[in-house]
Length: 471
Image (cartoon, rainbow, N blue to C red):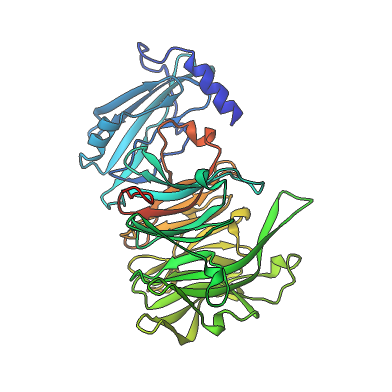
C-alpha cells in the first residue's frame, strides 16, 4: 500500500502524457491495472471503472467501439478517471462490450508501452440503484466509529444512514432491509439504552428483545417477505486469539437459538426445537414466498474454543405458516457437512427461489477470519452445485446478497490485501453462468487503499433511502 501511495504522489509531480505521441513499444500482455477490471461483466448503469497502474508516470486509456474506432480517450498522471457524463453516455449506447487500449509511461518504459487491449462486458440485466453497508475498522481491537451507509452504484455518492457519532461510540451492527426496501430496515444498537431499532418510513421504534418473552437478544436478522415477522438468531459470541501461526483469532458461539419477532405486537415467539441447548442454530433466511425458513445448525457437543475445528454447520429448512406463525414438523437438510466437508454460514435464496447462495469454510460459524472461506451456490431446481470459481480467491469471501432480479451478487472479500473487506459485484445469468466479478468503483482508484475501513454486511436497495428523521 505504501509503495502505491508514494508512486501516485511522485506521479502527480510529473507531466501527464498530453502532447506525447503513441507509445513506442507494444506488449501482448494485459495491463497491470488496479482494480483489475480486465474481462469483468458490469451493468450499463455502473459508475466509471477508474483504475491506476503502480509506478506509472503517465497513462493514456482509449475506449474503442465495435468497429475499432475511438469512442473515448482519457489521460492521467498515474491513474485513469473516466468523466462521468461521457462514461454514462457510452454505456447507454447499447454496446455489448468495450475494448480498452492502455499506454503506460514509467521508469522501465520511458518512451511508453501499449498493452494488449482488454474487454469490459456490458450486461443488459438491470441492477438496483443503491447498496447499503456498514463501515467498520478492520480489526478485533476496540473500534471508535462505525456507521451504516448507502451508496449510489451509478455515481460515487455516499451518505450516512446511521452512525455512532451521536451515541458515544456504541456498536451499530447487523442491519437488514425488507425486500431491498430503502425505507424499511432494522439494525442493532448495542450499549446502554440500546436494542433493536426498526425503521419504517423514517420513523424509529426501539425494542429490547432481551427484555421480552424468553429473554434472548437478537443478533442475525431476516425479515419475513410480508414485513410482519423477523427471524433472529440469538448468539453468545466469543473470540479467542492464537499465539502462533498466521491466523489471528477464531470467533465462535457458546450458544445460539432462533427466535421470531412479531412486529405488530412486538412479541417474541419461539419453537422449543430451535432453542434447545443440544444444538446451535444461526443465520436464518426466508424463502422468497415466506413459506420456508432456512438456517444453519450444528450439534452443541464440542468443547469451545478448543474443539472449534470440529464444529461444522449444516443448512436446513423448515416450513412456516404466516397465518399462525408456526413452523412445520419436518426439518430437511439442504447442505450436510458429512458429504461436503465444510461448514456453512449465511444462506441466501435468490429472488426466484432457485439458487441458494452461502459461505463455506473449513469449520466454525464466522468465516471472515477464515482465508479458505469461499462462496457456494446450490441450484435447488437442478439439484447440483453451480461453478463458483470466478467468485472466489485465496482470501476470505463472506457476506453476500442478491439483487432484486437475481442477476447480480454483491459480496465482501479480503482478496485485496488479506485484511480489509472490500465490495465486489458479479453477474449471474439465468442459466447460472457467473461473470468475472468487479470491485465496486471509487472516484479515485487509490481510495481503495487509502480508505482504512472495511465494508461489512452489504445489501442491495431499490433506490436512495432516508435516514431516521430525514426523508
